[in-house]
Image (cartoon, rainbow, N blue to C red; front, side):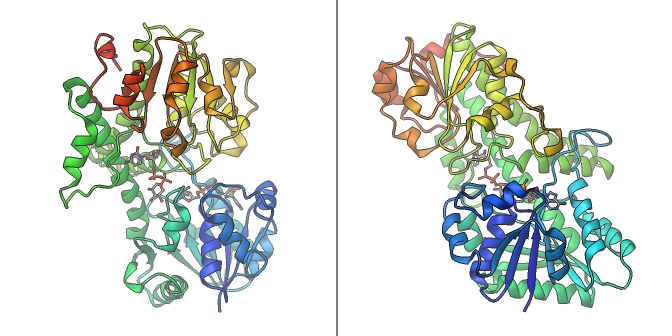
Length: 480
Ligand code: NAD
Ligand code: UDX
């Protein structure tokens, strides 16, 4: 029987370990974190992250075989298997700034494991890391502790936020990479046995360490590339009168392409895609592969273009000035069913609109005012570096109000921007919305969730990404 400890009680560590504890009642799982605030929340009625189904899983196992603690050293010492699921954000300074992964948090966790270990351990990379990180970690562990065997595995996580529990219950695959040595293979089997409690064995893929590490970066790059591809097409659709939804559907019915992940949007967000592609770009550059680096860089560039294009549409549609006009922002999270705002396109869109002096009234069912205020006053990439966080400057946010109701947000506004595809925005009474707004009333749908025809009948001027343009917008060309 193994005892598991996971360092890092975040979006990955928390749900992943809760599901392991649920599915393996005989395994004791402890999640540790240096943030007492996070651990207190995991031990309370109000979990630190919003994720459908998570509450139920935690309720069932917490106190039985699932524990959350700040006593990092004690639980690492006692564990046979230590997962490391700490943040690996983009570096903000020094060599590789703006691209490379910052492994400060990972390295400090590895040094601590070496310091406190008194018995052999399997150390599992759960965080997304650059390929070859395992080699560096192995060196840190073995150079700092003689006489204890550490076996490193790479076990990247593929869950998506908003569907984390569903994804963990029924993963497309579980990937375990290890050294091709007897110790490496034994460690792979130990971890495989844990997952085999609920994942069919044919879905547990075992590879060498470097393939597992690189597969994670590659998987995110491929997924993000699909979105940038369809978003690039959306710009061409607007220019030609094609409809991006029809184009996506036509492409996706080819079984070699498949229908998923082809929704055009205001841009992809989330803590992973941009960070992992930039990291991939940096690794390619370091390996003397500038053409490969430039290929992947373009995926992020098109994403930035898409956000800028959206802002330009808003400004140009409203007679090229939004100064002091109230604009309602519906949705701030990077996708529905999460309260996570890391790299959400809403940050860049809101900053763009504020740059043109708009007054914003923001509503998101899961994001707090405090969070929105912080996000709008923070520099790019700082969010995952807790040490960089500064109190927001009041000047940058005086044009912003955060409200707790969509109808309140839209009241007296000139335009509505839909930036997250929350279900409730599909169901709004748009006649009521129209009646409460200034005229002409604009809707800018960054998620393609409204019924464009119906809204135009009500009287709105509607912009929906990649859809044939409203005659009004044709006369007001936007240049990104
Ligand atoms: P997160 O910021 O939510 O959680 C990381 C936690 O680690 C924080 O609570 C932090 O306090 C803690 N931590 C940092 N250093 C520590 C230390 N030395 N000791 C103890 N605790 C420490 O991050 P996340 O979203 O859970 O992501 C974790 C990793 O998983 C990243 O590498 C990310 O790229 C990867 N990943 C994330 C997702 C996702 O959907 N969020 C999906 C797959 C993979
Ligand atoms: C992603 C990967 O999907 C997951 O496998 C990995 O472990 C972590 O990174 P996540 O970022 O949580 O997961 O959400 P995802 O569903 O991938 O969406 C990412 C962004 O792309 C969101 O902003 C979403 O709105 C956007 N998106 C997604 C689109 O714009 N169009 C789509 O068709 C799909």
